[in-house]
Amino acid sequence: MEKNSTPPNFIKNVIAEDLKTGKHSTIVTRFPPEPNGYLHIGHAKAIWINFALADEFGGRTHLRFDDTNPAKEDTEYVNSIKEDVKWLGFDWEELHFASDYFDEMYNRAVMLIEKGKAYVDDLSADEIRELRGTLTEPGKNSPYRDRSIEENLDLFTRMRNGEFKDGEKVLRAKIDMASPNINLRDPVIYRIVHATHHNTGDKWCIYPMYAFAHPLEDAIEGVTHSLCSLEFEDQRPFYDWVIEETEMPCTPHQYEFGRLNLEQTVTSKRKLKLLVDEGVVDGWDDPRMPTISGLRRRGYTPEAIKAFVFETGISKAYGKIDLKMLEHFIREDLKLKAPRTMAVLDPLKVVITNYPEGEFELLDAENNSENEEMGHRQIPFSREIYIEREDFMENPPSKYFRLFPGNEVRLKHAYFIKCNDVIKDAEGNVIEIHCTYDPETKSGSGFTGRKVKGTIHWVDASRAVPAEFRLYEPLILDENEDAEEEETVEEKSFLDMINPNSLTIKHGFVEPGLKDAKPQDKFQFFRHGYFNVDPKYSTPGHPVFNLIVSLKSSFQLPKK
Image 1 (spheres, one colour):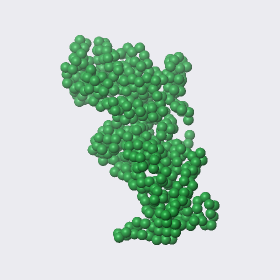
Image 2 (spheres, one colour):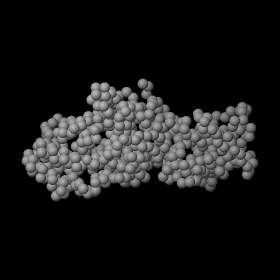
Image 3 (cartoon, helix red, strand yellow):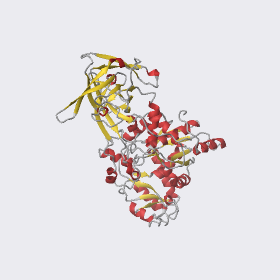
Image 4 (cartoon, one colour):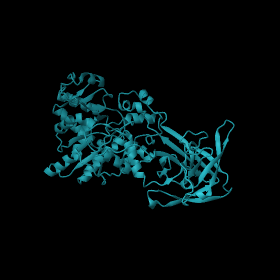
């Protein structure tokens, strides 16, 4: 995949035709997030589409913050969005805020009033909703719809001057209450909000609605192709109406694509904020969150995410993507990059009784068997080691090839060991096992005297580094994967859908070479999966590892 390229798609065809016919000489797109939360995996697709398409055709992309709702927006979100876009490998030519255009938007709203295309309404939000009608029944006119232009201008000025309370009045476009498109039934274009804005302070107490502001922003910036997800398709007639009736000199066009939806993944900002506020997660960057910052902290790479969105393509189709596809691409990206090492997450001590006390040796091990350029490392081996507790059973079932009394296994990079004795505590729990090793079976020695069916991993007990391991499962339970996306789901009901086992913390050991592992360093732990050093909780000498993804999956990319 070439950097920032896109596969063949209908938007690319439109752009190519527009350039060919001379409709546009330069392509301008924009990525316009509202700074009311952190970006999530769905935004990664929108970012890629806007930046990659403009880049392919030698155009430019703007980053614009649609900050028209001061009650929900914050500078924290602005900064996080900038960081995420850059981390994904994209950079904007121009940075804008919708709030930069509030004066122009106000003037265009006044123009609509003067043309008889907008009016001040005293109805409440509930009353407006009741009169809007349904998909099969037309709406009804507001009793304030026929106010004179002079009265509307006066009331709108007084709204701006702060003479009315929140919700006391709104400005509505005057279009057609019988339109088959509900979005054209006199939509609200300005409302009163007495709140301090992160960018304009207390200059304004009235704010434009997104559907009114967005086309004006595009036109002011000279955007040629306004690319958005499919849920805005029904808004396109109003988008065009605003551009035409406000007499904007630039006329951008809106194109919609199917959004990215992952199974067992919630992307509603309202619900994600609820998870943060209720302490279900430890912040927007919790590794269980589908936010870009959460994926970054978990250990996902920009390359894996961009390869994933590239594979999903650009179309009008709606559907849910298997979470395993995203996991496939991080495996593919890390398999040649991540050093391979050993970690024991649930330790059981093994004493090798015939190994000399007080001695140790260094064993040679490849850092990555699929990438010779990563070289080798030396790992210590001595009389006492740790193995995974699940790699020993006192009374194993058939076809169990790991350690049990009388059985022999290979220690990865080391020797054959054979279990001879089991030590238990007063309650009968196994606390230690005793084994013997065969010095002739050293890994790499060419020993062919006999074979064993099991190979297990280990770490040297005296030199291993204590570590914390955080294992993750999806936040949303399987049976709730559809309901979680419904905005109508009550907050308590949504919280009941959370998987109580989404995080498991284990304490074990890693090889001594990982003592000074740095935040965001990534490793493949033999038989466990890919792990990332957590940037929030790791401290020097005491690493915390986040499970990125398991080693194997039955998932396969669909054939094309």
